[in-house]
Length: 237
Image (cartoon, rainbow, N blue to C red):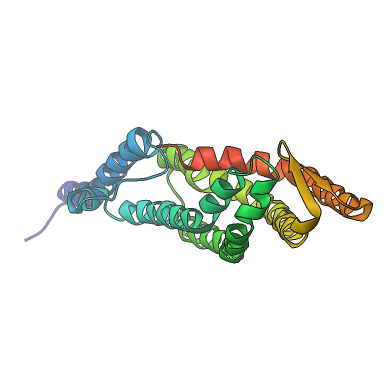
């Protein structure tokens, strides 16, 4: 049967339209998944604290591949909390218990143990941050989703990891000096008397050594002040 030119054009247009419809139909699930995920990030992730809820199977299905991006952030927050609760938090709590000079002696064994626990804190956080950002950077988010993912990544990853990484070396140095002072006071306890919590030394040399140690601690106290703010922020519920 002969097909005239008009019919050919109609068939061609119909084929093109059906193809466009097919492509559009295939993209609809992604658009819906992205909209669902964007809404979740905007109204849940950006509004809760630092303990993110785990996705249900239904949510994973709704978000499609975007659930993997959430998992990356979720796993970071979970792991970050575990790392800081194991080493950073106890150290901060123990340092904050020092109220009078004799507390340096009482807390010295505990702080010595804290130093061993915090030894890997910096490398653990650096590795965790790097691995998470690497996973998230493999995908280029659409503009509408990027508008909520960028602040989510900043809030939950960058603004938690970076300040801690910036201050951890100073905090470790401070803790070492506090620990050293506790050892010094304990080793020389026979030559020290306390009057209203203030140590009095039997020799000028001991007094000078004590003052030098106190000055070192004073120089690094800014790291304690900075990390107290981080500790309070990390533990907000």
